[in-house]
Structures are given as C-alpha cells and as structure tokens.
Length: 163
Image (cartoon, rainbow, N blue to C red; front, side):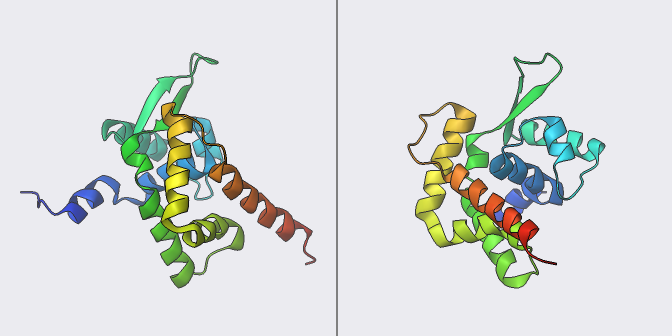
C-alpha cells in the first residue's frame, strides 16, 4: 500500500530523470513540440522515452496536449498550473546543483538568476508561464526573455573566448 507522504507521492510522479527534464525543456526552453524536445535536448533523450514521458505527463495533469493548428500531424504541449507551480522546486534544485555539482556556465546561468531573484522572481516567471501556456494576461516585463538573454550572452561569450 502507498504511503500518504507528500514527498513520496511527489517522487512517484516526478522521480524519474526524464520527467523533470521534459518539464524543464518546456518551461525554460519553450520547447512545445515533440521534435523540439527530441532534437534540442542536451541530454539526448531517446524518442521512445520522450513519447512515454509526454504521455505520462499529460495523464498526470502536468502537461496538456493540443493539436497544432499550423500542422495537422503536430501537437503542442503546454504546462498546466500544477507544472507551473514546480518553478520554486526547480529553482531550488538548480541552486543546489550549482553549489554541489560541476555545472557549465551556460547551462547554469538561468539557475543563478532564479536563485538571485528568489521567490519574487519565481512568482513573476510563474505568471509569465501562465500567459504563455494557459492564456493568462501577459506581464509587462518578461522573465523568460531575461533568462534566455542571459543564456545567449554566456554562449556568445564562450564562443568568442580565445582557446
């Protein structure tokens, strides 16, 4: 019989590596189509695993799947409110990883900014995600754009650095 422990129940839903990676890529990379998630994943997820995780995340209510109006054979995946509420958890995981693991500068810049911004920035980002995925009112300032710009700046700087 299952434990009613909230940590256990959360781990049952999110405990495998790929589920959080897919949510991360939708959340921070705005990757909304299967091909984007498959081809642009730094971790190189296999197509059968990605298909399984997308199906499971939709069944568990963390993602929604809708037909893409621009292409009949494509689907668009969107975060649901429960997934958006994972922002503080992912921010804390990123902060922990930056402190205790050998991270790359370009892949940790978003975590750094989220850690520095704290709960106020997380709330702004969650509101923007609601606009992007749930049709809520769009905020004036874009946290997503700020995170993406910081990432692109680090990538550009690393490419321009002498070897």
